[in-house]
Image (cartoon, rainbow, N blue to C red; front, side, top):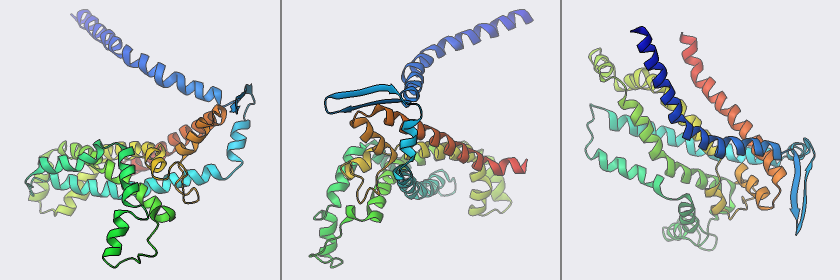
Length: 308
């Protein structure tokens, strides 16, 4: 009997590996091979000047030396992180608040399905369309300035230049990312909250715990795995920020390149056919993403390990 059970387990395992083959093939062809190809190309001089193709010539680490010899890379990294933080902090706070409201058994809000649909709708709009909408709204002679002038809050002779001011330009990029993604974050956090055993809430209420105590002592600790996932995926998405600032600033990263992100900088190298520098920048972006993701994971897990 034991031999039959063991043979069945082996057979089931074999079918599991068979079903994994399509995923592994797709991952190898579209992820693993391009990753190693990018790393390989980063060690070569390979660009075009007019109609003349230079390279590919092996130059070792020269692309990396050139990349880090100018402060531009750190400036664009700082721009990317600032705009991500400006959008992520209000996003996670609002998503936690909405998730707690929608999943609270004591509130029993009406029309939940309608509100859940509405907050998720911005996530379905293409980022390019969103950026074009905001570009039109916040233009120097756009509807926003017209309303402010009509209300007497702005001088008609000197309309506010939203896209020419560093703070307002970054704030617009962050606000657009916030609007597009807070619905998705809310759904993820709600799924985590709904997975918490209701008996824990009932026991806490019987013991006289307040709503705030229940949220901070029960909901947040049990929601930590989902929060870690949301933070890491949001960080990766933030480091890959491209379409919104690209369209909003017409690819210039103005004012004075303070909205230029790492992916926009990478796109300029790829557009100019400088594949060597593009590869080096891609490797840098990959390493930075891995380091920051590990830091977030370690930091969020530090409290749990100390308690154990």
